[in-house]
Length: 303
Image (cartoon, rainbow, N blue to C red; front, side, top):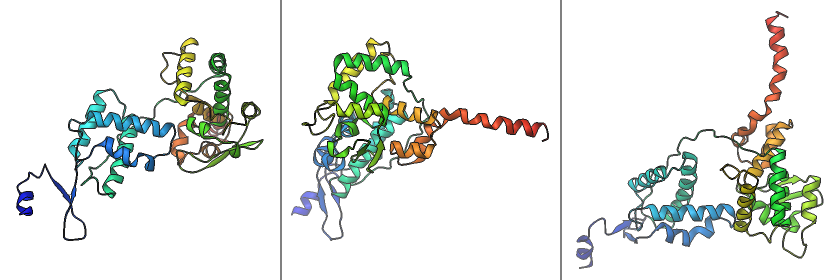
């Protein structure tokens, strides 16, 4: 009797996930919002990256024509990519959103919440432009931020001189610091790293209240971003969409390369998983090409 009842249902109304046993187990309909509620804290650590992922998954959930599903089809994936592109998302942005979606769906599939998965293909990305602050821009921006909050200004100094990500600086605890070095345990790559401190980075830390968990633990990320955007408007950088807090990390990397530090050391400093990520800054070391000229001059003279 139960078999007849199930057999009468449309395949779109009921899906089964077959396991090694002979009896199928029903896969109930779910949504990206529900799945993120179940697995978000397991898959992503708290911080700016998780904040971004939360927004990504929320956006994708809202974009689906039918948000409830038990099978996430290739058509659903293509629908999302098409809608993101119509919204003006670049391929790099689409790739970040699809990476979050893929990670969530793989976990859901492994746990039996989703019947099958589509094939995720990475969109081709252009190299893009690396924007960094020159010294005059840094001085003007930091001065304006200081007028809003001395703590925020010291945080900016720390970020630009260590190349730390926003979340890494906020998560820093007093036990992660010595007089000369900072260790970042919770990183995007999952691998900890230590970097030496400049004199002004060390001063930025020591001015903080040691009764707090960390030197910058009192900073609310969203309030900091708001202060940042207000400051950039005041100093005339409001129309430059690349002047976001992450530019401080780019600025640190650019200064290291321009100062003659080899790419491998810059990779270690930034904690990049692959050298290709660091190679985005390699063109800034163009002064190294000057040594090629004497070689070509001698060759053309037949010496």
